[in-house]
View 1 (tube, one colour):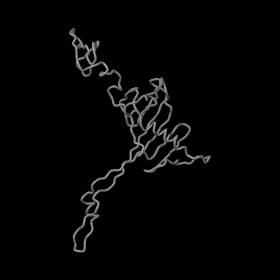
View 2 (cartoon, helix red, strand yellow):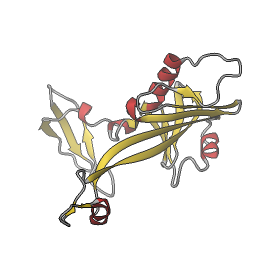
View 3 (tube, helix red, strand yellow):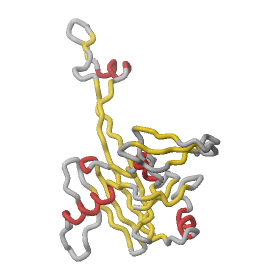
View 4 (cartoon, helix red, strand yellow):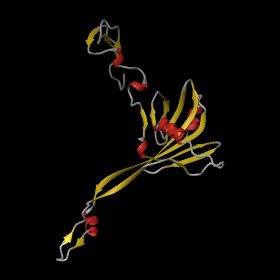
Length: 212
């Protein structure tokens, strides 16, 4: 029940897709068809999108891991492959399959449980928020940068500036009247320590701390 609405109490199910219900505060019990208790989950994940992050691999351009022991940064072009911004001091080659596995794990995150909501940006004081609930932050942050391309129409001013004048003085517009725009997006995840099989995750700018 939300906002002063009427509560509905679910009872037994005599057959498939049939259930007994009783409006809260009333004695009358009704048999309803086309509804089951499974349709009305009590978990938060039953009512919210389970998708936390969904960053397609081809769009990823940069990835970094920062912890108390240091920071590692990696970049790649549209065609790949990944390369370390700072090469290994021992000259060891980059383990690309392992890196791809790590990036794949964090670029697609699904909700297991909403740990709690806060009234502002959850990442602003997330360490205090976690500690207040018995969860210790692991002080690990991940930064993923994506880049996508799209075509936009030239403005009338741009078309005018790119037009040429023919021999007879006619203004000839450019052959292509669109231009490519590259959009970059940065997602920063902060990860807490594991507890009871869940890891606390917050995405900067959001008000929810998730359990994954």
